[in-house]
Length: 446
Ligand SMILES: Cc1ncc(COP(=O)(O)O)c(C=O)c1O
Image (cartoon, rainbow, N blue to C red; front, side, top):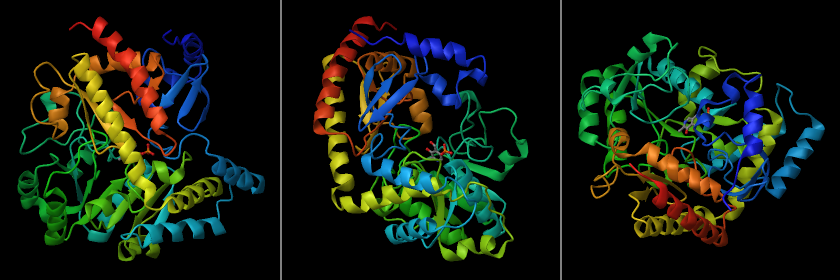
């Protein structure tokens, strides 16, 4: 029998009375038919208040790389909680975590700890401007760098606002921002090295940094085309621009060196979030010693009451140790499982004549639901392409059936594998998905 969500519905109705909009992060409203309320999770599974068990590919929006409630981490957290949850001061754990990070990622010589990646991005922009003495940041359309005024430039509410392909407008999807911030950004399309060169040429000496998601998990899971990383590297060197890799999603997921090690790049600054905190509010601004100088001198401010919180450090230390212990098995094993899942979903889409195609490297991927006649064309290449060709309402329809059969993908179409997923989970996912795809095919009408 398909799952029902009556208990979640009841709670969501009650939540409206005290929580603005009933949820605490806007994106959670995307979950249909109702934002779910959970009781507990273990490994690859999570249970809601209606007693429904899901094979979880949302996995804390990618933060729970190790699966839910891994045994060793529970102990690490309890041990620290017994000693104290917050000191706003120094402790040995911060030495340990910082040393591990500097040892694991070749580009990392120094770190500063933060509470979330949105904050770490804000710190990176401030630092880049003060280090270079330049006013602007170049970012790419559809690359998400947190929800603040600066991080969310380059997203639009409507394609009519985008501007021409060769000169995308500097836009922000939220009202209430400081409008002048938009003038401090140059926006470029992703995966078009020639376009990037042309876009940068007239403004190169005003740009403090180029920021990007190495694998654009927030827009169709786009991998960089040949020459993209090399072009960014060359342009940064040529114009004295800092390179900022936002590895909030990819860091540690793609192995202990992050996506930067896989892609062979050497960023000046890197943002780590999600996996590095193992589900606690923790993120890291990392990079070269010389770039951190303005913070060391105190001319550029970086602060926070909860920075380097010992509970978060305990979780992070556990996770970094755990990853080290996996050696070469990570990320190979979850890549392989992800690819099996992608192939199985593709087969199901073909069987039921659903224009759905998984795209991405494996351990994270995106299921694009193509609009009519769009599937046969080449894979999605940038944000505009994704926006134009992805049929969001048809995907939402299928996603709801997946949820009703106990398979939880991210509302936008993203799927994260965790280290807790097994071959058995993948097979069960495909069995359950078979029913969901059939139900979708039988009921979807355009
Ligand atoms: C690439 C990237 N950067 C930054 C952020 C912001 O992270 P947080 O929500 O922890 O502030 C996210 C969140 O999903 C992200 O995917």
